[in-house]
Length: 298
Image (tube, rainbow, N blue to C red; front, top):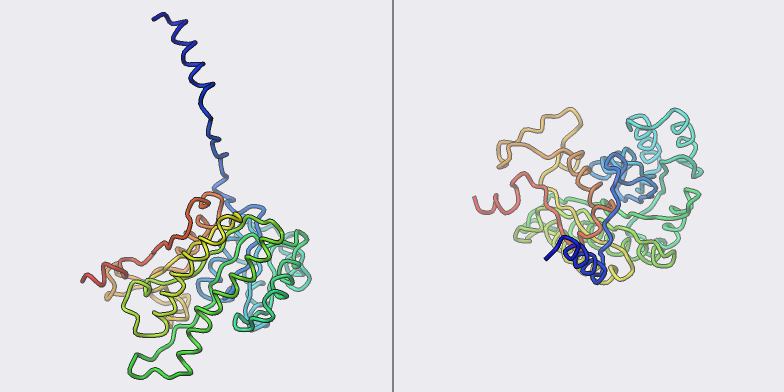
């Protein structure tokens, strides 16, 4: 067969095939440019680390919690710590903590006040001129200290309500807002490697629940273009585990020899809620340093 015939046949084959569009290149330095995120539990621990990482990735951020003074201080800290914010942007954002300008804002929100959630979500969206929320991170959570033998009804209810009920109804309120506004967004739940363990405490039970509802929400919301996933850390050096910023992260009891840093969890979160994570659906990503299934094996 001649070269001319080969070329003709190739062109004919190409014309007969339905071409699949190739995704456009992504600026990995600004994976979240143009996005707006609402982060519950954003004034401390993993939530605060995610807020900082999101800002550094070009995202506008609204942190949510129950302590207004702490939220205000965290907004100020975020503006001073984020590496790529200009002085002009910092000045606007400082005012925006209250009035909605700049790139960082806060809202006083209790994840147990279910009736107020739809209004709170709208108030959060209105913090910025775009009036939208592209990303929800459910990071608010309680640990609980008692074991099965010493568990009280009060502690059981507190942990289960914040970790499971709060995640459920925040996801409901924000997804309804996204659907109404035709926003193709992301919901990221903070689960735990405890979801791999026998559930004898409300903390473990609540993280099993988060893992399960992540799959359920993904199934319900994907037709609307809303991607739902979870990130499941092992032990992380946060105040929840008694760790402060300058404390050692060494932990000889862990397979990996140390605690995870909040910034490591946040880096994975940036990828998962970016457009590069659009085909991660209903999945739970574990970052445990070996404290999940490997620990159980040992």
